[in-house]
Length: 213
Length: 211
Image (tube, rainbow over all chains, first blue to last red; front, side, top):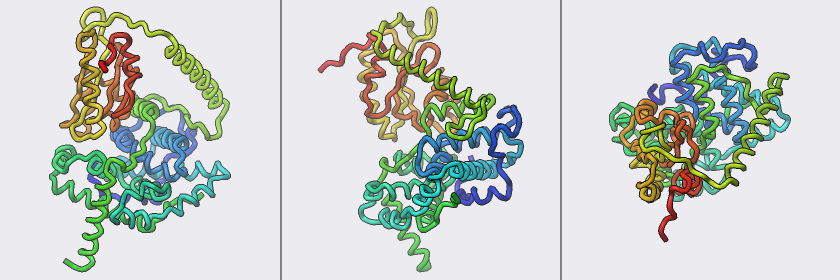
């Protein structure tokens, strides 16, 4: 498991340009499927599955069916590609690049895409943060746009960051338990949580999604 | 500590408090279990990934796949309707796989810190108590001390490796499922969800709960 916070997850889509992800046409690379995919990539794909889903969801305007479609296409494209990087951290970034490209392509196929994505980009991140830090953080969950804004920010975090956030805040796991699970110290977990919160705050503070319909 | 650091610390503490307050209501969307299982099988098994987009423009091969898929869905749906409408006639089962084959299993996945599991646990115990004298293997899998990455190995050692392909891993805690002789999950419920499907899958062996 790669340490969290070592790469900027939200820039994965942008970084995809440096190392082009797999071709989007699933028939373009021949009939052989994932048989040649390295085992580390398989591990990464399974490890990232939930995080990828949450990364894609805001990019397809919160449509669960489209999100699953793009997730499937991402996995297929990654398995079929012969250009997967060898390093695990690079593989994570590369897979997110594929997901970002496929999300963009998803909208190119649809006339309604521009409108929906513009709505996505107008989410109220700053207000979400303000409410989270207020005395009534629950109000974030009462408005769709704020809730989605929070989800969008969480989805842009790396898989490890998402995992530690959910385990600690949603599932009520203690620092000691997580330290055992992640093979680190309690201090290390606190540091990861701190970094995840800092990144979450950054995302909510006005970063718009890198979507170009 | 500089002013800026103090400012950051202050905001971090407030965000921390906000996230703690939201707690279990923090939304955690995930792919559906069947999609997850299918993708996991594809990734782990090295099988040839078929074009599976529902919406991308399809070739004739893709359209054929869809027609076959739609027909299969109709057949499966018809089968489900038939199963629901047909009176349950449980076959004789063996205990712990002795005799002619492995038995059906009633399995609970528990985690001490998972509120969903805590909700399910007493209900599972009550159900298991009703099944105790019956020919059914009851298993309570405590995942509290498991580390990430150990799940597959541990579940396989318990003879439950197949559930990983049928149920999404992060959702396992708090799940009660019925696993048939072939290792297929035939019914499941999580947290406070009704157990009627699970009871139906267990057939007539489950006596009515006392009022």
